[in-house]
Image (cartoon, rainbow, N blue to C red; front, side, top):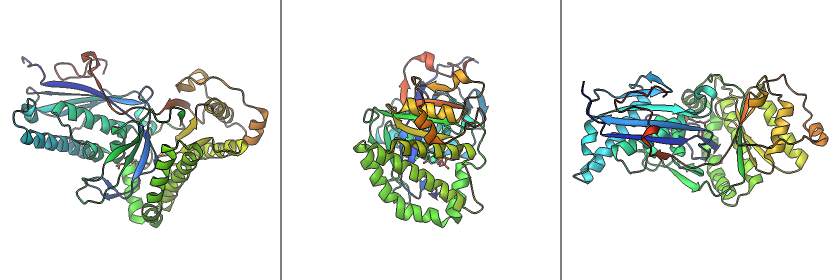
Length: 401
Ligand code: DP6
């Protein structure tokens, strides 16, 4: 078949985000509207990102998608919801401006390919980066310029927060149509340059209870979750915003830990209960509190999502000492050299005083599989070079994709 040139090919990247005020629970499952607002930190794409290419062509007879090189079912409801939303927004724009050069693209089918530069099943919020990248890339290919919160959100709620860099809030909104349930930046990535993020990968296994199923059960059965959404989160959103604006690390760190703990408490309050933390997660929690107690100051914070991996926040002057404490308490397995990935952390000695204060016998090697050191980063990016495309001109994955 003589193939026409594609009408458009676009490749973008999008970041992972980690919530410091957690989203847990929907008031509308279909529109993906949350029961409380949430706030997150966007992680740097040098360490963690999704790359997505979208190609539209009159030649394509159906929408198709490849994830990490494997073709997946494009009929999956969340994917369909994103595609429907973006085409609706594109149609709206075309109606508002006749003669749009991209108007013919609306009748075209799309081919999409997406890859992560980190293990998908490691519980590192890959769906947030994935759906943010999908929304952002589809918007470029179909010529949509409006707010993309509602598109990304339909894929995965937390994905709308990955549409921006720096510090991002997702306002729950009040309207039933969800038009006011949008993500917006609280502060840019340049705002707090000393902030560092360590991801302690505890288990690369797929999680037992997915977020969607877990939060549905919590909404149905947890009185604590209702209390949290109504009486706790509004004041925490305001306080967290203040801590970020003023770069108040102890305030930021304490609230981050408390909110993570309350999220996991609502999981335990769910019936039947849900538990995402394992014994290694709990040891990390104790390690952080003992490290802070030793310093008489809150120098490190942990937060956990729907899995056992810890995300640690600290400042650049503390990273090396904390990594030494982790190495001591969780000796690396056979991957000694590859234990620390990402940003360089200079080796630091562990003082006898700190070692005594941790009061922890080292675990059997490999409890923490590896650490990814990263920092706050920017929002989605467009890659201009054609060589970045994951799909060839024929709309099929390039051999390496
Ligand atoms: C614990 O955004 O994955 O990570 O909207 O059902 O796809 P769905 O859920 P998802 O939930 C994320 C939950 C969390 C907390 C957070 O990121 O705010």
